[in-house]
Image (tube, one colour):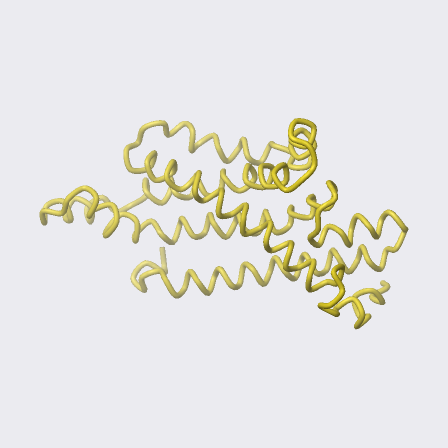
Length: 218
């Protein structure tokens, strides 16, 4: 294997717009935006379905639908409809992250220990207090697992942004293939893999810090 591109200090110089650190920053930017939009859309829907039990078929089928959608094909469709730019990429990546976030929010709410919820109601808690002080904290481990799954998927898939002329680590793959520079392609693949692992470890640390100690075994 040829690691020359990866080990060349010039490719790690932040003053170079096409350097690996700058590509990582833009890659994480696409990832963060997609996760934010996906959470804004999917969390309220998943929590509502899980809390009320209404429309559960949406949450049950969302995972299968999300896995069956080809992200690159969806991106090309969005480009056809909307033109080049950031918006088609965000739509494609957001559609990718919605199913795991939605299904984990639904599953977290539906798998609660209802004896605890009933006890909270028996103590006189209002519905919003039961939701925010009892149900959400208990569902948090499952919800965060779904968020971590979504983050891994979008970190690996955000490379498609380069296919429509944007930045990110996909530039190493697309540009490397264009000029038969397989050292650059290898560098891109390695950096994406390492970045995915680091993102998951970071989110695991966040989960460890914010989940109640009594629920960490859930």
